[in-house]
Length: 114
Image 1 (cartoon, helix red, strand yellow):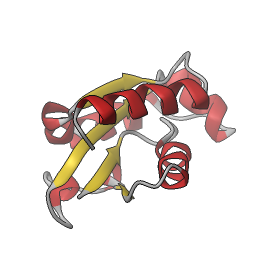
Image 2: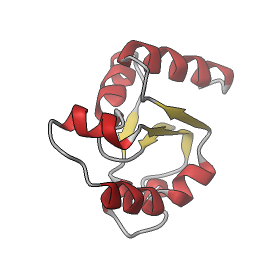
Image 3: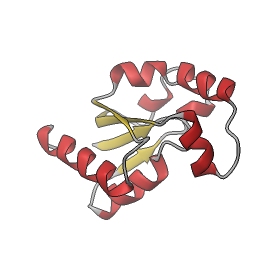
Image 4: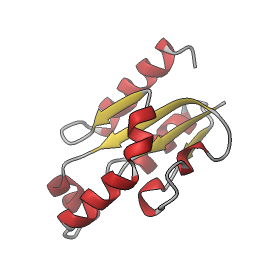
């Protein structure tokens, strides 16, 4: 079973997915924020865990290296609403390092027996 990672642009999906793969997990980082398909995160089979990453819009702008429009952030959150409601872990990465995100997610996966 896969671990699925979703969240708005710049929240840390790609970084987390790479770290989890390095730890031996099968991971799907789903670009749900770009899709109007409400349950896109479910495509590809049942997930062992659904991880929702979020971050403050100003931090996303810094991570992306350019302004990230607030309207787009809110639109992405709307598109991610179903995934967030079904997430086994919601994690705000605004003030967390990638190592802290990795550690929190690995601990979550252990508690789920994944």
